[in-house]
Each structure stands twice: as structure tokens, then as C-alpha cells.
Image (cartoon, rainbow, N blue to C red; front, side, top):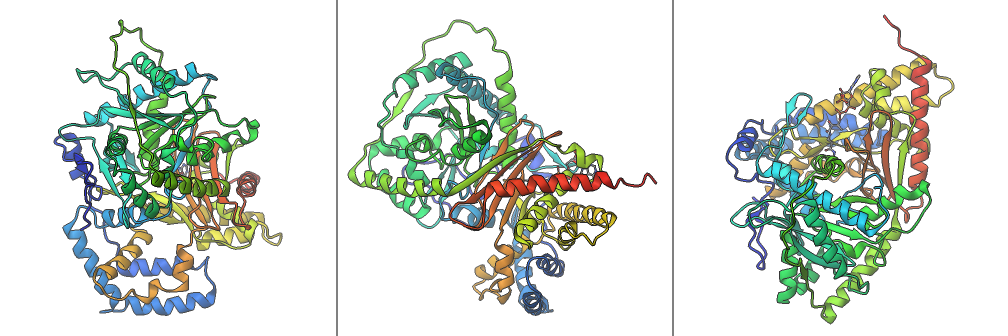
Length: 626
Ligand code: COA
């Protein structure tokens, strides 16, 4: 069991023990308790499927070597069986055998900066305002909408979600508000202040690198109205006009070990400690950004994506963030807006569901309000910057600016068709997009690569994700055939349909808890926990290739015409996130400029072509009506 230690400065009402659900009576708990527990897949099944998953991405020679290792690992009475039993024992004792391991391995012990490497952003459609008034009005409405969503969480009236007809775990919704990541020397933690004796009642507002505590509830517990919030935001704006402040928030962009050291240094000072605590406790953050540099319409969305992911660097809006905060809405003066979120407590879908609600809310006509009572001035959060802290900020700025320069991001709106087209062809839209990605990659590089697509495990209590391995034997057969002039068109169609079907089958297996990646991770972590040596299977080249995800992809479907974006998982890879709408698809593709072999715009180009060619192939060879 992991121990999450409270920081001395704060006594949070609820430490996020490995995603433990809040102790709530009633509907939520009853719902959660009714959910099945995550199964441990059968060992032999995972071994067979692992070998199958390797086929398209490793050489025959590597595969032969790995087959021998697998045979040794899976033999009766062997290491595999022993570890499997350990996992099964673990599963009997816990609500979810994986969730705390996953939280620790994927997030809290991950040492690269959360910026670009872990925290996703969301690009919203450009809003129809061009000045401060419009910015603050929209921000006020957005805050009210988010508080409206919070009321549903607090009252447990949030409708339960379903996937494939099965109810989903709703725990992540209870982790995204009033929470914050806190850096630690080897492992971070997440604190949550949503419940307890004094649940949070304020949000953090940042403008010109200056942080404010804004109370968003009246003394009777009702949330402030849009008008009241607007007036409070104006007060904040007017008292933060100076643009020469130290960008203290940039500290949160650093490598986690460096940030942990700087954090301890920062909170030695009592005032700083109180300010940091206020940010951590707040329900969420609103970043009132300066306008982003003007660019052509063509690159506008890509520029906004970069702003959401990193803020544009130390000279732009990066100091207008506290990147450890779980949820940060960003509203810039020129109408560009979106959010960035810290990934540890939640996957994209709950964040986007909240965003859908908020955006719908901002469209509602405003009610006529009764006369307003005067409200206190929002509290400015002060920081005493010692020479050491200044030094830490300077180092963080340098590192951040390198990251900013390195991120290559392209948002592509694919206008030609949306998910309705594959549906009309009786093909799963997600599978169609994933096969197109395989085709695009193959055309660019001449081979398949390890490809990650997130699959929801929320059918299970405290479930997070597993991996759909989109590069399959069938997808490789299709992409090899597609540009082969010697291949019949009808054969290509068959191969395309088979590849899509294989993807959909993998998806079904994954969401039912039978994929291989988390199981393999579990077996490896069980070996570490049992203090036995790491089995050779995990030291093998094939395993390294399988875990080197050159394509790290995710569908995050939203009702809003937005797109989520994130950085690549490996230095020579791509991050590809997409939102398939009915008649178009929004893609955000990222790469690193420091890698000579990758290029986000080029990948977008090849992806567009792959999607179009696949449509043409299906349309030119209609299915028989029989
Ligand atoms: N013929 C016609 N329609 C089909 C079809 C077919 N053969 N196969 C699927 N469809 C339909 C579905 O019924 C669905 O219809 P809807 O739009 O009315 O709901 C639609 O097409 C979409 O289905 P599909 O494209 O197959 O994908 P999905 O919605 O089942 O999503 C995943 C697949 C993997 C994205 C989803 O299971 C999942 O796990 N999502 C969470 C991912 C996540 O957590 N990401 C965030 C990480 S930060």
C-alpha cells in the first residue's frame, strides 16, 4: 500500500489515497459498490496476445527470441504463474488491483515536467469577444457554469455515464475539483479539498502573473451570480495591471525533482506558504491571459493549442498558470480560450464532460438579477521572492523556454467527413481513424510502430485506462496492400474492413479488462514487490520496442467543437488526440522539433490523405446488398 504523506503546511480534508472514492453516503456509493472489480486476465491469454501484438512491430529474429522467453515465463510452476497468483491475491484484497500502482507509475513517480509531457490541454472554439469586457464577462459565465457542474457533483445528481450499455465508474468526477498535485523528491502526491469540515469555497484567478483568491460563494452558501463574479474579476484586473511581476507559477513547469526542491524552499516563508496553500485548495483556476500573438487563420488553432499546453513561454502566458492545479481554465483577451489539466486525478472524458456543460451554460441568456450587495475585495496572494527563489524561477524559465521551442503542434480540422461516413459503411469510426493513422505512419516511415490508444476501464470500480494496440497483424496487411498496384481493389477493401474489425475487437477486449498492457505492468510490479529479480521477458528488446509508443493516441469525444491535445510519449514520436464530430474530425498532432524524423504538419498531411484514400476505396467498391 502506498503512503501518501500530507505536507506539513496543509492539512487537507481528504488526501487522494490512490484514487479512493470519497466517503459519501447515498446514490454515488451505492452506484460505485454495484460496479464489478477489475479482473486479472488469464496469464496464458496475455502471453498469446503479447506475441500477437509484437508481430507487426518487431523483426522475425526478435520475435523468435521473445517466444522462447515467453515459453519459459508461462511454463507450469514458472515465474509467470507465481506472479499471477500474487496479482490474484492482490485483486482479492483491493477495490482495484491496478489503480494505485497505475497512479504511482504513470503519474506521481513520473519525473518529467507535467507541462507538455503529461498535462493535456483543450482548445475551445474562438469566442466572440475582442476586449477586456468581453473576456471578463465570458470568464464570469464560465465560472458560474463550472460551479453549476460542481453542484451536481456535490448533490450527487450527476447522471451516471454508460459505455456499451454498461454503467461507468464516476469516481474521477469527484477528484477534479478542489484538488492539486504537490511535488515530492521522489514521488508527488495529490491533495483534494472537496469535502471535510471546510470544503473549498474559492477559486484562483491569475492575471499578469499575479494570483488572487476569489470567494465564489455567498455567506448563505449560494454561488455568486455572473454579474457578481464579473465585478470581482474587474477588481482583480484593475489591481494587477503591472506587467513586470516575477512569474512565480513557472516554477511548476520544472522537472519534478527540481520543482520539489524549489517548492520546499518557497514554502519556508509563511506568506508564500499561505499563498501556495490557497492555490492548492481552490476549486479551480481561471487564467486571464494576454492576447496571443496574431497569426493567420491557418495556424491559429495550433497556436492556441500551444498556449493551452505551455502558455507560450516565460515572456507570454506561462507565468499565468499553476500547472500542478488539476483544472485551469484559460480565457485570453482576444477570444481564444480552453483549458489545461493535471492528469493524475482524471482522464480526458470527465474533464471534457465538465467542459461541455460549462460551454452550454455560457450560451444561456443571462437572467435579470436583483440589486447587488457589495462584496469584499478578492485577496491578492503575495509571494516574497528571495534570491534563491528568484534563481529557481530563472532556471525554470530557461528549461521551459527550451520545451516551448521544442514542441511542434498542429491542429487539423478534417472537414471532408466525420464519424457519419464510417458508420454509413458499417465500420466503427474510431477503428477507421486508427487504421488511417496506421496508413499515414506506414506511408511516412515504411513500417508499423508500437501504437497506444487509451481504452476506458471505467466499467470497473476505480478503473482508469488500458491500451488498445492499434498496430495489428491485420492493420499491417492492409497498409502494405493499400499502395500495392498488384493488389485487387476488392482485396484492399476486405483488408481494410478486417483491420477495422480487428481494432474494434481489441477495443471490446480492452474495455472489458482483458487487454495486455496493464496486466504485463502488473506482473512486472508484482516481481518488484515480491523482491524477485525482474523476469527476462521485461528486459527483452521486443518489450522495449513494444513500450516505445511512437504513436500515442486517444479519442476524447466531446459535444463541443473542441480538441484535446498533449505531447508525444517518446522523443521520436507523435501525440495524436481527436474528437470525431458527426461531419468533421478535430485532430491535434504533436511532435518534438528536436527530432529530425518527426513533423506534426507532415503527419497531419498524411493522415488527411489516408482518410480520404480510405473513403475513396470504400466508396469505389460498394458492399453487395445481399
Ligand atoms: N457500424 C455502424 N456504427 C458503428 C459501428 C459499426 N460497425 N461501430 C461503432 N459504431 C457507432 C457506435 O455505435 C457509436 O455510435 P454513437 O455515436 O451513436 O455513440 C459510434 O459509432 C462510435 O463508436 P466507435 O467509433 O466504435 O468508438 P467508441 O465510441 O466505442 O469509442 C473508445 C472507442 C476506445 C474511444 C472508447 O471505448 C473509450 O475507451 N473511450 C475513452 C478513451 C479515453 O479515456 N481517452 C482519454 C485518455 S486521457
